[in-house]
Amino acid sequence: MTFFGETARIGAALAAGLMVGIGLGPAGTTAHGQREAMPRLNPQERTLDANLFVQTSAEYVACCLQTYAWAGERLQQRLAAALPSEKPPAVVMDLDETVLDNGGFQSFLDREAKPYEQATWERWERDFPTETRLVPGAKGFIEAAERAGVTVFYISNRTLAEPTIAALRHNGLSVENIGERLLLRTATSDKTARRAAVEERYRVLLYVGDNLRDFSETFTTPKLSPEEAIAARRTAVERQAYRFGTDWFLLPNPVYGEWKTPLGKEPRRFLRPTKME
Ligand SMILES: [Mg+2]
Image (cartoon, rainbow, N blue to C red):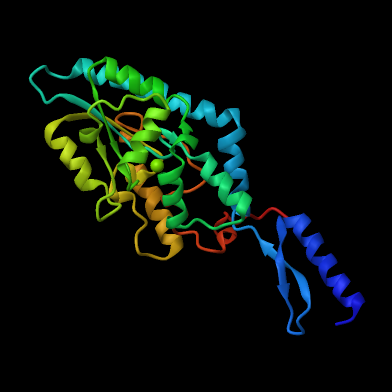
């Protein structure tokens, strides 16, 4: 390769990097043994705006406060309507992006240009519980529920109890009887059996999550074509619309979740077609 050709190629890679967020990775080696800069796509590029929405927008804070304010109202209403002879009242909450904000983990993936991997997540979960923050409104809701005598259960697909309890403690949340109230991932990410275990002993007044599977497995991505799977999940929500804002409360999570499952590597093809020219 000529010097000019090499310079032009690297120049083109730099220009592309500036335009679409490709960084220059560590130097690679050519077939001729020459060191050269290899363009590297940050796998988090697609998620950048979603991360910024969560980490910087006032709109995200408002969405969370709005959800928790109404969840608190509904909790008081449902509590007042409960008969005294019934099972003791409870609420079931997811943890990540419902109570605990893991923005730092997303920042790490972006900074290091890494894809999500379970092992990396487990390192975050195990070693950095004090890097978690609170989702806006979560603490006020939890404390009001506890003051009203409602037991708060956390059903989470985290796997490590001690660091999770450390994260709750770090964020000033009660960890009283937490051994009974924290239901972590078992052999499955399906939360149905864990919800049933709580429902057996408690009257669950409401559920809070950031992923529809925090409420029901009917929202799992079905084994259909991606187009059909996307449509099926939306239809499932419409069919159960009466639950949302009644006893199901959803926090926004534009960064990750079941919604991303059908999208694959070419998500642009799912954008709505338009006649506009
Ligand atoms: Mg979650």
